[in-house]
View 1 (spheres, rainbow, N blue to C red):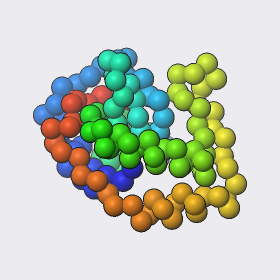
View 2: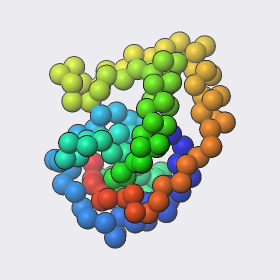
View 3: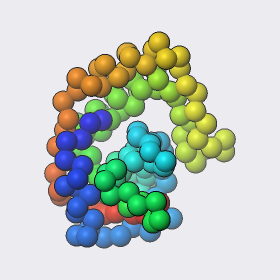
View 4: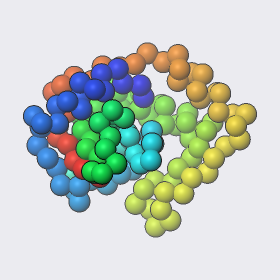
Length: 137
């Protein structure tokens, strides 16, 4: 999923409640840079999107992530992109499985089937009221 206003959402951290990281179960990551940048997690039995911005990273401190409640349409978009990524690029086993987050990477010749479509996708706007809290990891 491509999100247009990541920096604005991360700026909301100061205005939202801190959620203990022990309450968060990461299901999968959508982006990674020396650690997760965004993905899907479970909190209190429901799935949420989480993200941070590369500009807010500090290697000397834990990463802070905003927790986003997606609309039904956004959940459908996320499921579509995750399924397409797993089909053409890499299939991650879900975090929390007994085997851990093993990754099965597809051949590079398949990657363009995902990345070309993703590049053309229209970024979505997340509303500030969709940010329900933040956590550290």
